[in-house]
Length: 321
Ligand code: GDP
Image 1 (cartoon, rainbow, N blue to C red):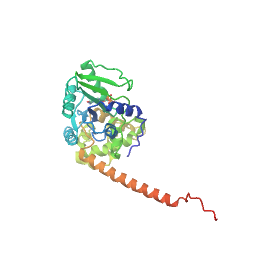
Image 2: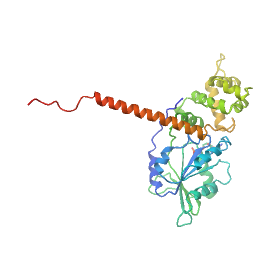
Image 3: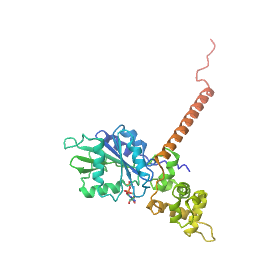
Image 4: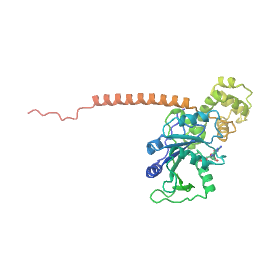
């Protein structure tokens, strides 16, 4: 299902980033390690131009440990980009951020040329958790910065290293259809924007093929991974509902309740360490989206041309002399 997601305005965030970006040396974008492509916001690249970027692939404790390195390589291969993996249990997040930024802007050291960094990320990516950890450890100087917004926060990670937090919301932007359900499953999209059952059916469509053993183990399905992979998505959800006693009076399965169970289990990590996309898959989706977009643009141009041909001439009819 392609999720329809039209979040509220982002004026505050956009304005704050635009104002702050002039004095920024490195932009940190936090990504969800379970969906490091879908959780990136391309608006950020538009707003920050060619500033060096540190991609923090966060919540790595929830992600497939064989896939996170693929994403690190993928991001590291990009120009002016460095990527690190992190999670809330990390004992030295500040050191990792500082080292990552220094790789990108090595000349920004010392009090005369302090490193100035902006940190951004879509909701639920773990930004507040990280900022709180950084703030507690450093007795952060936080407060208002004149001329920007009241809620902009500055954290001093070292005498010559300043980190600014973006105020407002950097909402997810759905570039490829496949990202919508993934963002919803991860918890980044507002609850009212999606239908839990259809998000879970899409999630199961992926999990049954790539993480069948985890599904079988968690829900005691008693099936081999290959057997689960051969089931229809609905059948997987029905089996989970039955095993979990999600049954209504009269014996009808309560698929809504089963969907909530699966979502909670996925989000909390009890389903196991799972990633919903690989760089290769994501690149394929991007390519598909580009082809679709091109077809849409062509169709629109064709329609515009036809409309123009049909439209009556605006020239005034000539009056006979
Ligand atoms: P924000 O919206 O980006 O500020 O995200 P929060 O910091 O509020 O985190 C969203 C949820 O993710 C909270 O329930 C956090 O406890 C949880 N969380 C944050 N960081 C991590 C992490 O590294 N690993 C795991 N497993 N959960 C995390």
